[in-house]
Image 1 (cartoon, rainbow, N blue to C red):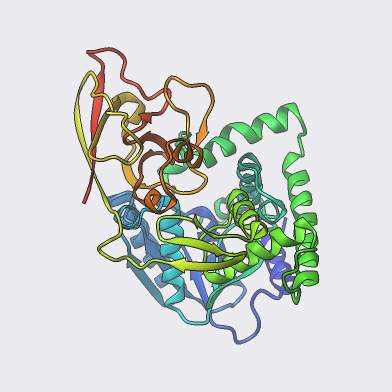
Image 2: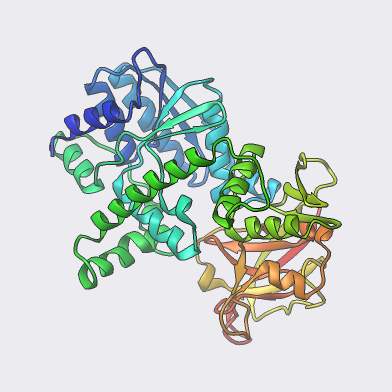
Length: 428
C-alpha cells in the first residue's frame, strides 16, 4: 500500500480538507496520530498541532506532551497543549472517566473556533468499535461506526486514516524510522477494547473468518450508507403518531442529540417513546447525573442541570487491610456506606465513585448473571427524583459496588485474612 496516496485519495473522495481550510491536528503521540501528522506534512497541508494531557498516567502523560511538542517543532507547525485532570472532572460531574475524557477533548477542540479537527482513527478502530457496540446491543446508527467527517456543535472532525489498517501505519513508520510513543495502558487486557483487540478478534480470525475485519468494515459501510439515506428521508419529517416505530426511534435520537444529550441509548429512547405514547401525567427520565427528559402529557422537554452546590457529590475513602466490612444493605444510595473488595482484583487500577448512569449494570454477589442498575432502583422503589443521589464505585469501567446494596460477584475478599481494600462512600 502506498500510504501517502491512499490518504490523499481519502481526503479528496470525502472532501475532508477543503482548500484554504484551517486544520487542527489532534495528536496524542501514539503511532496513529504521529503517522497522521507526518502524512499531512508530506501532503503540504499546514496544521496547528494540539495535544490534550488527560493527566491519567502521571509522568508518562507529561512525556507524551513533550514528545508531541518536539515533533511539531521538527515539522515547523504551531503547537498548543492543555492539561485537564480528567479523573477529578469525572468524579465532580458524576461521569465515567471515558465520558469525561471525551467531553474534555470536545471542549478543548471547541477552543479553536470553527476549525476542522483531524484525528488519527483507523480501520482497526472501526472494527473494534463495532464489536464493542454489538456486544452492548447498539442499533444501526451505532454499528455504522465513525464517519469520515462529523460535525459536533462548532467543530468538524475528520478521520483521513479510516481506510488504513494499523499494521500498515506501523509498517510505514518503521520503514521511515519515525518514532512514536506507546501508551502502556493499550496492553492492559483488563480494558474491554484491549480484550477485543488482543483476544476476541484473533479468535474470530482463526475460528470463523480469516477476513473478519474486512467483512465487518464492509458491513459498516453498508450501514453508514443506509443510515445516511434514512436520515435524508426524515430530515423534514414532523412528529406523527402513525409513523413507523423505526422512524420514531430515529427522530427521538436526533432530537436528543440536538438538545445536547451526551448519549441516547436504546432503553432511554424506548422509555421516552412509551411515556409519549401514554400521553398522560408527567414522567422524568434520567439520562445521566446532569441531564434528563421530562414528558408531560405526551410532550418531551429536555433539561440540563448546571453544576450547582445542590448536586450530589460523593467522597470515596480507600483503606488497605484484611477481611471485610459488610455493606449495611438498607437500600441503594443510603449513605454513608462501607464495604470491602479483594485488593488483588483491584491491583494498581484506580477506583472512582460517580452517580449511576442509564446503561450501568452490576453482577451482584450471590446472584446469577448481571442486572441493570435501573431495574435494581425500580425494585427498591427509589423515586426517579432521588436516583441522581445513588452512587456507584467503578474499577476498570466495571461497576463493582453499589453502596447500600452490595458488591459485584468476583470482587469479594478471600477469607478473614485475605488482603482487602475497605471502601467508604459519603455524600459531600
